[in-house]
Image (cartoon, rainbow, N blue to C red):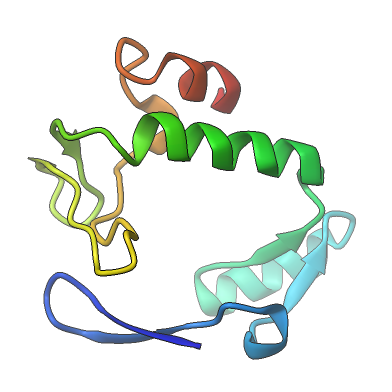
Length: 115
């Protein structure tokens, strides 16, 4: 587990490995289980929606286009345009609003791949 602080000072424990994560995980075929869990918890983890190659591609595009960007992007928690807030591990701590809608002028490959 990694112990982090949110920009507002809240402590968060983030699992690094599947064995550290107690969250239920579902297969894409289990629509009933997914729907029920989401209704109860407000989130759901669905396994194998994307292939390992697709995951590596999107992670690479994140690292090369989104993460190094030093301009303003709209944020989920504030709905305002802000620069990235990174912790000492380089993680972006202020989540991006509507990641699938990032500006294609700045993130052409990420946007093309993600939509």
